[in-house]
Each structure stands twice: as C-alpha cells, then as structure tokens.
Length: 243
Length: 235
Image (tube, rainbow over all chains, first blue to last red; front, top):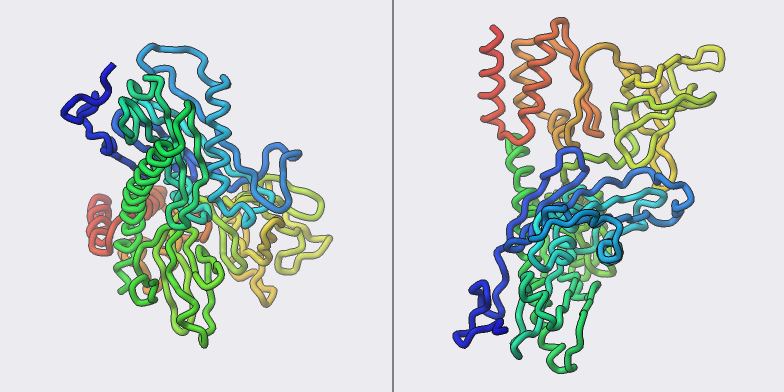
C-alpha cells in the first residue's frame, strides 16, 4: 500500500514531518487533584491524578520516596470495532508500566516519602499514538495537581514507511507493519526517558527517525507549556486586585 | 540566561531555570516552595507564578486542590478517628494529621475534649516534616485558645488553596469586603482549601458561600459586580 503518495502527502493529507493537531485542556475531572485531556488529531485521552495521598497497601509503602501507580485503560468504544474487556490484558499492563516508569523519572519522589500518587489514564478515542498521548496527558495532570517535577516529560512517535520517516503515526500507518518508534524526553534536560520500537530499522535510518520523534516531542512540549502558562495566568488575573 | 527581573511575577512551568547562581555569588537567597537548587541553577518544580519578596526570598505561587502541610498554617480539619492520646484529622494533605488531646487551652488528662468523628476543627499546624504525620494544635504559641477549636453549625465547602490564600490576603479581598458591608456572617478560612461560613439566617450562609465559590476565577471588578448582584437579589 502507498502510505506517501508521489506528491509527498500521507493518507490523511499530512506532510511526512507534520504533526496532527494538538489540543489540551486542564482540570476536566472535578473530583481529581489534577486532571487533563489531551488530543492528538483523533486520538483522545483523559488523565486524572490523585495524590500525594496515604499509601493504601501498607506493604508497598516506601520510607524514602513516594509510590507512583499508573493505570491505563481503553474505553470499549474507543476503537473501530467495539471490544469488551480491555482492562488487565497484556497490552494495557505493559503500557501502564511504561507510563509509570516514564512519569517516575520526572516526579521528585523523594520529596514525598510514605505517600502514593495514582495516575489514571483512559483512552476515549484511539487513532494511533495512544501511548504518547497518555504520557502527555499525564504530564499535564501532574502539573495541575502540583506534584513536584524535574521537567515536563513529553512523548511523540515516529515511523518509517515507503522509505520515508513519518512523524506522529495514525492508526492506519501504525498498523502498516513498519517500525514505530515512541520516544519520551525531558526537553529542558535533554534526556531520553522512553524509547520503544516494535520492528527493525537500520542504524542510520533509526537515528533519523528518532531525531524526528525528538523534534515532535519538543513541539508537544511547547504546546503543553503554553497551556500551563495560560492556566497559571488566571492566578495573576485573580491576584491583580492587590496591585 | 535566567536573569532575575524577567521571571518575577511571570508564570513558569517545571524545568524552567529561573536563577543563575554563578552570576550572584555574594548574595544569600532563600528558596520557598516549588523551587529547587541544582548546582548553579535554580529550577522550577511546580507550575505557577514566580514571586519575589525583598530582600531575598523566592517562591512559586500556585493553586491546587491538595494541600501540603506547612508549619504555622491555620487549617480546617475533619476528625476521622479518635485514639486515647490523639485525634486523627484529615487536612487534605498526603497523610492524616494528629491532634494530641492535650493540645487545647487548659488541656489536662482529666479534661479531654470529646469530638465525634466528622467534627470540623479550626486548628494550627505545629509540626510538618516530610514522611511524618503532621501535628496540629488548638492553641496559639502562647497557649491560648485564640479562636481555635471545633466549628459548630454553619456550612463548610472545599475550594482551592489559591482561593483560600486570596480570602486571607490583605487588603481584604473584594468579595469579603462587599459581603461584609451588607451581611453579618462568620467565616473561617483554612489554608488547606476549606472554608466555613456561618450566619444567623440560612439564606445569608448560602449567599456568602455561593459568592465566595463564584469568585474563584474573577478579577476584583468582576467580584464586586457579582457580589452586588447577589445582594440585590435578597434585599
């Protein structure tokens, strides 16, 4: 199948190095301590953060750092064909683990010993790159909850189809069988916290694809940053009466 | 890169480097909540606004739903359990806080206050160390009750920590000023994001509570207009 046509356009009309439209919102779950929704094109996820709160299972309590838990789930209606029982399968367990490890790398867990932070991410609409979207939503939700973080982790995927590196794969491109490289970075520190690939790529091409994904992460970071700054700006407006 | 005038009173996000210590070697500075020193750089760990107070204090001001206990803060707590030597009080923090039964004015073994589970108490934080349950007291530093203690009747609602700080700031914020001119009511604001309101008439309580909850995202002018509109409706 032709994923990039001779004019250099992809199936959904994007250029190879073009991202899907990003949309994000903070504070979408009123009961949670921090929450956010994040959209990358048709992929739509929601994240809720609870904590730091008391550890529910005493045997997991750590005296020098906080316990971070993450639960990833997909809504039954999120994919094209409606599927039942998506919670607790191998795929979502693996993604939960990946998100947990990525977020743990940026949360300053040593500041909150003997407590627990729960991150719940749910996919409302899946169109490729749910992993990246979940990490981005979790970052926003953690920032909303006021949990101390080293940096804003962001994630983006890139692939390689028809001998062209493609940024931010959608579902069709994702299931084409080519490589799918998901990268998560700490943009300010310039460190990689997540790198996954589920196919083989030659070394030199891999470097190009990864570089493309890193560029994508930086674009996501600037968007997330803007959303957070806008949110903080409301505080300035409110406190403006004093001055 | 991060010279100080450009970041003060501006919103910042985690990871931002706001101060470069190598360029200010002869100064002593104090870092408050939300800032962390990493060798020569001071980085932000919480999203919010960078504040600076003369001569040398820097901190991040932000508004959250969960509260991180700090010594000296007056908070509204709810009793969740009682033991022989202390009450367990929920203050919306990462852990329940302990309120020793003797931490009351004139408290002795003979004279222990009886609080049911669910009682709302206005207290003060006296110990807050990471990893240890915070300790509360219903006395001020000189051992007087000083308005601390259980709050009876009235209505308690939850707000963000930012709203609580706004209500406690001076000069008095426009909502409370506007309400206070027409209405007689009592208010207790906990820095942990709980507000308690009481008045003689139920209608006044509802009005005051609604006005305060609405003021969360309004500017001072909008607050004044909103309060006036609400007051017009009852009179």
